[in-house]
Amino acid sequence: MLPVALRTERLVLDLPVEADTELVAHYCADPLFLKYLTTPWPYTMEHARAFLTEYVPAAWESGDELVWAIRRSVGAPLLGVIGLRRDHEIGFWLGAEHRGEALMAEALTAVSEWALGSGVRDAETLLWRANEGNRASAHVARAAGFRRITPRIPTVPGRDGRTLPAWHAERRAEVEPDAYASWEPILGSAA
Image 1 (cartoon, rainbow, N blue to C red):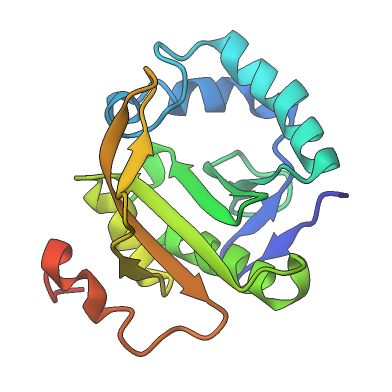
Image 2 (image 1 turned 60 degrees about the horizontal axis):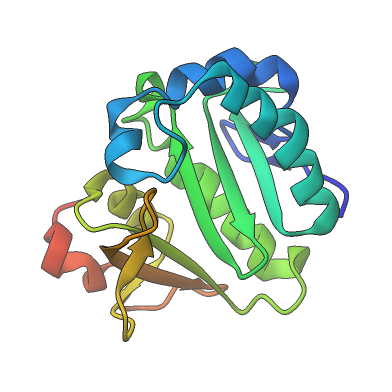
């Protein structure tokens, strides 16, 4: 598949490129990545370069994962990354310096609407999951219209191969009426 650029009111989602290596390495050295993500740890420039020059192009070509850089405008510095895997599972991260502006919720909404519209054949739902306790990611999923679900086995793979307790949610093209309220047991009712 050829890379697709998406635009929102404040963002451009386009192809992550080798010029983003330094920022990817910087952002992925965040201690929260060790706690909540499966990125290599410690994360190095070599990891970032391989991700950008090998993984991302191959994943787009095969359709295994569609990976976007999140930027404020065309050619602007990278803020974060969002990816949609072949199994319709979506994942994302944002550099610490850019959190708190609802940028990721905007990016997640854009990718979700594109994928569930005409972007991904046979996509009826998207899946989000995160390590239990990753409240920031859960707030993003809730803001983007994902409804919290409890699957039969609520886990996520850990970096070391173990399975960890996880939160799960799904999103359909039309946001379900109970989507926001479904998060109350773990996030409360405040926005």
